[in-house]
Image 1: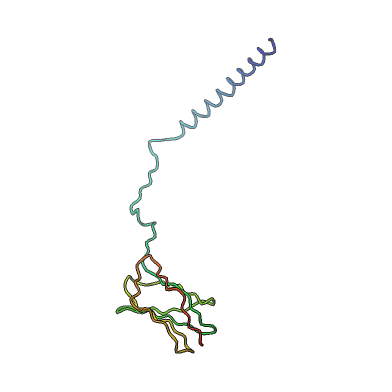
Image 2: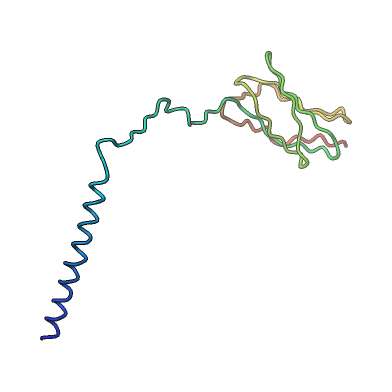
Length: 136
């Protein structure tokens, strides 16, 4: 029983010793912080950090081995010219919203594919699928 009382007594002494130390530190921290002059962050233009889509895009692929592919998209106001990558895929951006005629052709073939009345919308990608221009 005496051992139990001794253990309780030492625990209480430690709590008092370190507890008062903790109270002193908390008091200093709170005394040093001035909450009346808290820094406020205001947002003058809440949309400044948002990204808005400003154009549309078309995408697809072309089967035309060893050929330079030209993709021309035109409406009454704009003409955008692009080509495919080494895998025959294309992703062309910069379109205003509207209806376009898209012509896909190669330099060394008379074969071409024309898409009429293709709707392009801002912030969207219009998929044209796969076009086969392989010489037969």
